[in-house]
Image (cartoon, rainbow, N blue to C red; front, side):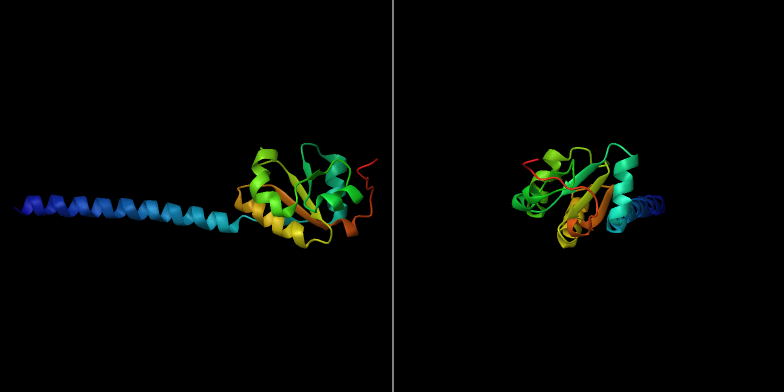
Length: 141
């Protein structure tokens, strides 16, 4: 009888500690997700990346009308309100460096948060085109 009670007790303890380990792993994973964030950089830093690196995407999150009025050369357009529905279709590599901007910086921050929620890991947000002192092209160019 004592052997049976000991075996049952050991089995219960084993299940308990195994379950706690899995819970701790899930908690740690959730904490890691909370800690993930995008990086704020300046327009100058974004330009340096564009001039010296490759494999990045410049992401304009303004409206189509704003984009047509003038955008950074090579930028692709996904309006901020379409990030959650279109990003994964267009931005297929979630580890690719994304340089995100809008008009003044508010929508680019919101879009960067939405990209984080979708699992993107290499996001650099550099504010608005109103602070961009470099080349801009128009859709008709």
